[in-house]
Length: 145
Image 1 (cartoon, rainbow, N blue to C red):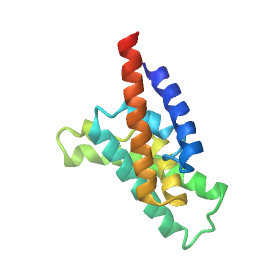
Image 2 (cartoon, rainbow, N blue to C red):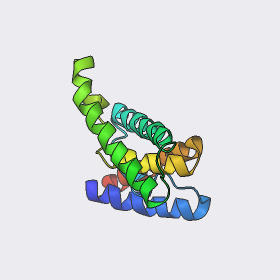
Image 3 (tube, helix red, strand yellow):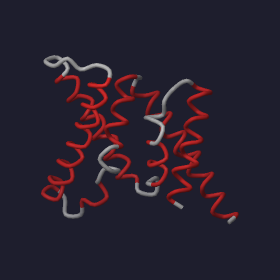
């Protein structure tokens, strides 16, 4: 059901963007969050890494010229970097850290990019709305088929 979840999530995200004019953390991010709604620690870790990437970007932007494509690339790189650091350091702090892993390396950076362009609360609220709608539609399709 992974392909179906991502495809349905893309469609719901595009419809949501057209209606609300708010990006739900990117177009693909809510679909990936919908895949992991049954693992809330992974969703939480992804959000925390995105916020960490965003604040790291804000510090770096004081010293570097970061806008447009540079901003996007920097946020995706920071998201991947922090996701990897998080994955490497977490076993030293917790006995069973597998639930606190991020959803991939790219998703936190994409989410951080939209958190920077929009405000944090509307972006996260939109992401969860689209992810939950996607999750329920995929569940219905799974029951029907």
